[in-house]
Image 1 (cartoon, one colour):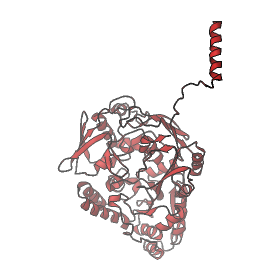
Image 2 (cartoon, rainbow, N blue to C red; image 1 turned 90 degrees about the vertical axis):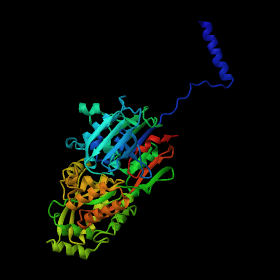
Image 3 (cartoon, rainbow, N blue to C red; image 1 turned 180 degrees about the vertical axis):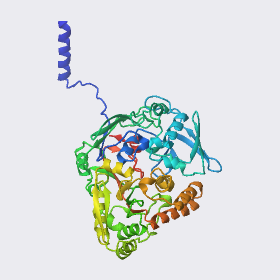
Image 4 (spheres, helix red, strand yellow; image 1 turned 120 degrees about the vertical axis):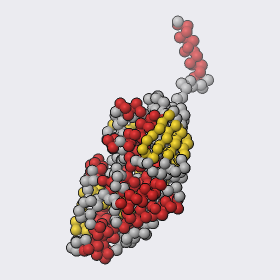
Length: 503
């Protein structure tokens, strides 16, 4: 035993003399991405998600039948192929083979059927129910699903994209576990949610698109975007969603910034079922008193574009085709007088500055502009959770809203502006004309015909001042230099984090 010890000591000494340093094999550094966000998620049910933070986080955990790519094209997701029948009243989808939920359960057509039927059930309070309300029955067998529709519905394919159309496990649905357990087919697996602090995800090694290169993604709640930028500069955060143009302008060359036009839009949402906004002249007065260009200049540092109701590129509204495309104070006062308010009026507007960095500035800009027409705007400032609950209950007269856009106008507004839409109570406006036009838009397979239909929808919304559409902000995504392979999406989704690497 003593001899062995002596030999060992001699061996070490010889190595040191020879200049050789013996070390253990190096371990690969973990690739843990920290994403800085200002707002926490608010639920674990993807089909009911309306908060941007919730949509982005759960979008990495759950998959949908189709996806919208960087060029706004519909591409395969959990379905690899699809086709309509000759009349457009039936959509057949073939599912991807070998997909598993994160608990190891195989994904098949019965899961699709159960997921879509859950969305269609009003009790689930699914956010996008109206987008697939034309489904009258679903046939499911193996990896094949057939949606039988009450009317021709071409845009229903685009409606199958996104977190609100997440495919869930039929077993979890039957057990009533949705929103309690998190079990998707996406590139990352849910680990934990520390409310107000962080959401932790780890890579899904069995993901159908291949295991992500990142080991984990943690969404860390940081109160301000300025603080997020400081964390990026310090290296404690490697990815951020920025909404403030002022903060974006401070991003240095040590970081990478993606600046992308998005489909989302800012609007002064009006509840036309509540006095005095049930008076068309009052709504038109609001519209004519506001310069959208001024709002962009003062609230968004000039970053953004004036928009009409529809931001879908193929059917984009012409913002000049509205009453008062430019601010007209004289006309605004004339509308107020015609509406019975010759001496002006006072309105209350709900705002949640935590939702988006420009919202506080938008509120101040609108308040200043409306005052010139004799309209006093009182800002009702609330936190995000209060805003969401009151917004869903239509408990407001006007509200500054930051809403997501879609690649198809039907998916964008059917749920808002049709009389049976599940968010029509929130929208505060519908008409028989809109109901008819949306049905026509669903039924037509002609881009030319659909363009004319959505132009008419846009005119109906603008001429009746259903809301006051303001502008489309830019999307800012900021990363550390060692984060590579990220592809920004105009939908606001962070799904492409599945392709990101950290060097």
